[in-house]
Image 1 (cartoon, rainbow, N blue to C red):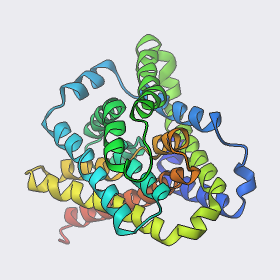
Image 2 (cartoon, rainbow, N blue to C red):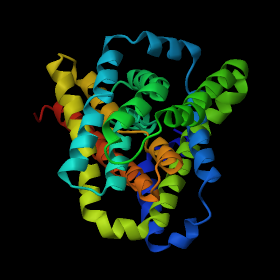
Image 3 (cartoon, rainbow, N blue to C red):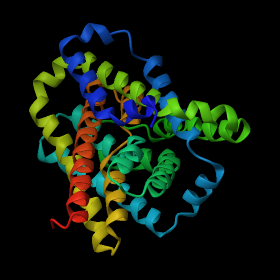
Length: 313
């Protein structure tokens, strides 16, 4: 494995480091806002597109049974948990809307890396991420308007256009680029995961730096709400998959896909379409939380597999 790939696999470390730096040195990230945030997410999604082929997208659209199960859990379990967490923690309207928005986002690209680390089904993870991402232009705005509309005014059409612009189109551009310039893009593929990790780390750091006072004021309840959202997503993704008679490898994959969200999209949508800048804060915290939980689960599953192979269980 080349060093860019090894560095990308350590993404929780870089996300956590970015969060710590933003907390103690917010001025370092004051310049990274507006178009920089949108551009960084576009670069990350373009990198995801470079890993896909037209065949992958067609398979995702056709949705084999396991992808259907993951898709349904993605857009039912997570939005519901976001709504429950916001109400249970009695968050202010701006933060509550942000938590709900995170729950309505598609699966995150880092889920593919975590699936690899967890010895899950990586091709299935890629298909599920592609399916939920392509559907996000419809599902994310509709679910957000329905569940977050009681907290803030939600422009559903604006959310749909922004999702199409910063997620779906860059992914499709990456697929086109790979199909037209395959040899050249093969060299880019080595670097694209690391570039995506850096882009998301910068987004997280920028939002935390810009909203540090709000985080200090509502930090405990907000972190608890985001932790409940993602821990519940991982747990229900695995448990409901096993109830649906999926094997362990598939259940791990669905758990990871459901539990990890495209938090970068949540940041961009909140900044563009919610009136209070604090609404982007849950998505930034989400990126740190789901990266840590996903990595811990991957380590636990690898340890369990090792014990089983040695006959310790």
